[in-house]
Length: 244
Image 1: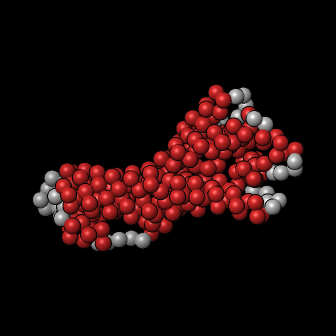
Image 2: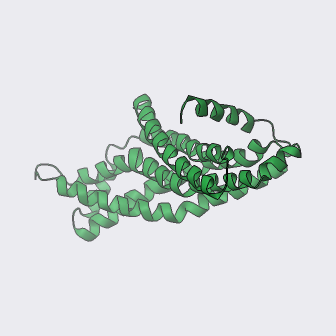
Image 3: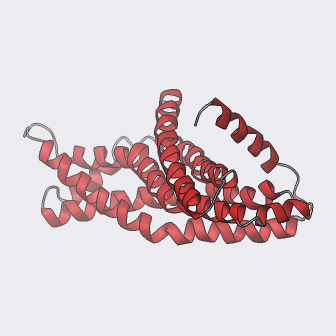
């Protein structure tokens, strides 16, 4: 996204956050989007988080070559890695592919079929009606999905460690309950909030200004996912640098 596109992106956001014409219609659309983003993605996030937690436990155990290091450290490392990095970032990148592509395709298709032009002719704020519900669903449901991902990733580590014998259940539980810093959850939720905004607003921008036909819509969807993933990684570094 160059400076020209960034300027158009900011102007689009300015249009998005205008006062809604009919609040009832917006609330109905927000509920629909929250169901799609939150409930519709829960299964995918659950599967990925559980297996990542299990694999993390095995890899940490593999790297512990010294007998002088207690195995409880496996639970501590898995807990902090899951909360601070794996759950927010991996979940956001997965959601950028699933949700971002769908948002860009939906709005892009409405643009090329002139449905957005029809909304504007009827006096409806098209950016607000089409994009605001998606952004609100992103900044509310992505943090909730990340909280689920944290618990499932840590639980996956417990299951994976117990089945493989890499760490006993008592050692793992002792590890995840020792020296826990609740501030790490605050950092993760700040990341999830920022990522939720990126996942919904960037694809919406790419779809809203697409020109051409079906080929251009598919190209915009691909571009939206790529830009979203890069933005997520950049913001991940910035938030981590600012808060830790």
